[in-house]
Length: 539
Ligand code: ADP
Image (spheres, rainbow, N blue to C red):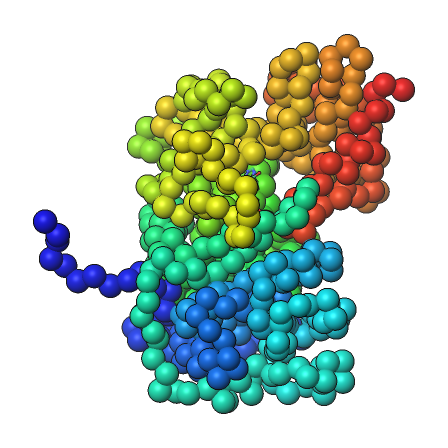
C-alpha cells in the first residue's frame, strides 16, 4: 500500500525559492575580485538565478548540459549554483589551482558547453581557449569589460545575460535523481575523476549539514564559507544557507588571515568553515593585532587533520568552538562530524583533548567501517586500524564516464584513508593508505607526528614520510618549515615527542626545509617528498 502524502521531487531550486520567499531581505555579502564589497540578499539571488537560467536556455543549453565555473566565492557564483542546477543543467566547478593541462582535461572530459570565469582567471581562459573542444561560450562574471574583450573578442558578460533573462521564468520540475553538479577530485596520481551529484543527494546532504549534531545551521547564523565553492560545493554550505535562510558572507579572493579577521568582525560572522592551514593564518593575524573574534561562535575544520594546538588556541583564546569533520569529494563531503554524546560531557581535559583530534562520528545517512588488506571487517575497538570504507545517501556510486568499478563487491566505497573506529562510531584518521609508514611491520601514523610538530610554536608546516631503512623497512622522517628567524635545532624539535607517542614512533631524523609542496586543494604532496627524500636514511 502506498502512503498518501504529496510527492514533490527534492530539487535544488526549491531551496533558493524558499530563501527568496521567506528570507528575502537576509543579506548576502560578497567580496568582488577587485576587493570591493557588494551587499545583496536572497530575494535578489533567487531572481537573478532565474534570469540566468532563462538566459542559458536562450544560449541553447539543454537539460543535462554542463556549465563550468572557474571562480571565487562570490554572489554571482552563488547565483550560478542555483540558476544552472535549478534549470536542470549541471554546475561543474573547477579548481583554478590545478595545472592548465588538468583544467583542459577536466573541461573536455566533462564536455562543458559554457565556461563562467571571474576576471582573476582571464589569463587561464586565454591560455585554455584553443584546447577546449566543447565550450561554445566563455562568460566573464561581471559587467562589460574592455580588457576582457581585447583578450577574448567573443567573450560574453554575465550582467548582459542577466539583463537579457526572462523574469517570468519559473523553476522547472523534473526527476530528483537528475544530476545537479559535478566536481573532480584533485587526482594527485592519474587523471582527475568526476563525482556527479544529484538533486536528491544534495538535498539530503543539506538536511544533514543543518542538523544540530552536524553544523547546526539556522536562520540567525551568518556563514563564512572559506572553503572554496570549487571544492566539494563549499562543503554544501551555499545550499544549507538557502535552506535555513542564513546570511552568507562570501570572501572572494581574500583568504589571508587579515582579510578573514576583518570580514568576520566587520560583518558579524557566526560560523566559518575551511581547512586547517587557513585557520593557522587567521590565528597569526589575530595574535599580531591583539584583536578578538567578536561574533564567531564556531568553525568547521576538515579537509586535513586538525592539530590539537589549533583547537585549543581557538577555544581558549578566542572562545570559538572548533567542529572537526571528515569527508571527501566522493561523500558530498560530510562523512563524519565530531559532536559529543552525553557520556562525553563530563570528561577530563586529557580525555577531551583525545576526543578533539578525532574526525568524529557518522551522521544519520552515512555508514562507516574499517577493513584489513584482505577485505575482512575489523572491530570498532579504537585499536584495530584499516582502510576506511563508507556508504550512504550522499556517497558516490561510480565516477563520471569511468569504465572501472568505483565500489567494492559488497557496495562500499573504499576511501583510501586508514582509520580506527570506536564502539560509538567515532573515527580517527591515521593516514592516507599510500602515506602509511610501515616500520618493522607496524604502522606509524604520520598525521599524529605532523600535528605534534605543527604544535611547536617555531614550526609553520610539517610533513612526515616513511624513508627507506635497512633494518626496519621504513622509518619516519620529519620535514619541517621553521618560522622566520627561529634557531630551533633538530634535538629541540624531537623533544616534543617522548611521552606523547610510543618511543619507536619518534622520527629518525629532522630535515628543515624552506617550504613543503602542496597540491591544488592545499594537501601535502607526499609523493614528491618521498621522491626527494626517501633514501636519506640509507646513505
Ligand atoms: P576535502 O579535502 O574537501 O575533504 P577531497 O576529496 O579533496 O575533499 O579530499 C578528501 C581527503 O582529505 C580524505 O580522503 C582524507 O584523506 C582527507 N581529509 C578530509 N578531512 C580530513 C580530516 N578531518 N582529517 C584528516 N584527513 C582528512
